[in-house]
Length: 188
Image (tube, helix red, strand yellow):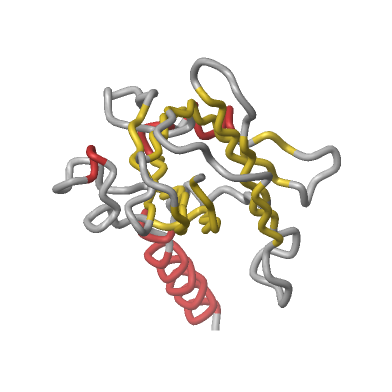
């Protein structure tokens, strides 16, 4: 009887020992940021009225659509300096996410898209490897009046070496979208 008990204990100990391996240790995951609010301020170079674009989604993936606002029209044939502010307003006070994005700049990139050929974007800042980041940018409107959509997307862990990504083309970027806002803008 003693031998059976000793063998049972030895067998169970062996199973426990063999059952624990390095494969069972979870790998830390760099999760996507919680961002509820994206604000873009476009300030005309040389003076004029700044235009503010904002998307705010306090319930995240909940049932309510984001609130999107545009403070006014853009001027024709004008260069705007753009700056983005990102917040997590599920916390009180709201948490500014810009610092975290700057600290993890190699894992983030903003992409800017417009429809109806109303203007073009250029990056004014870079990540730690010299690749585009996009918290600061310029937007240059065309000489023609019109309206279109402006989409600003933040990608987490994009492939920054993929074709076109350094030029701001999101097509081959991959990664996960942290936040995206589409704004209906007018150039007049």
